[in-house]
Length: 292
Image 1 (cartoon, rainbow, N blue to C red):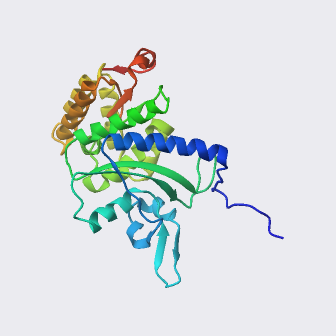
Image 2 (tube, rainbow, N blue to C red):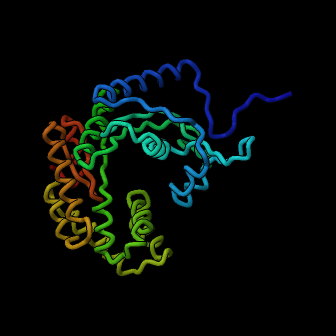
Image 3 (cartoon, rainbow, N blue to C red):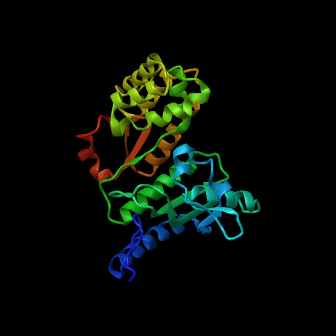
């Protein structure tokens, strides 16, 4: 006799929970469409070569890959971003800027544990075909609208700027070809702390001097007491590094756009704007170092 069960990392959603999930998705969809975004749906199955090499070595190991009956290498989609890139490449006639959203399941051959599943939903909104950072400000406004619509009030939205982070790494003496590897470890700073990140970087062959210089930039910028001063301080510390000044300027534009919408701002390293409902600002300022 077969014992009824499902594979580890997968879930059933019975009506009681499914109804709630669907109501949440409907709320999110309504906000997206209010802002002029259109729905996009792609197949759950892609050719393996479409996905491979896009997520780094660790990500590639988590892709569900197999051969179909025709012997073709195919894979379950790992995220919604690469399928979107394929769509943009296949359909150049799409009017730009193309504003779309996707709410759909993805699959990862990860080790199941609390809060981590092999099948889960992702919710993406994207604007394709514009270089303006006002598009980023619009996306953050939408996130703010979605969360408040769902009754979530005490939240933060963090923003990192790759140009700024690249410039910090270069200013610390990291060679251009090693910046991505360096930042991948630095990204764990909030989770595991300075000592662990420093040890990991040394294991990867980065010099103690470069590691210390990067932390010095982070800590010195952290002495700023408001968001504008924070960005100005970072700009002075990375002067001459390619893209750094532009990254600072673009974050300033985003800051001004969000302020114009009366969204409260505070700042926390690394290079992050944090959006929070204005009525919670006083509470947050008791716990955060930087205030706009």
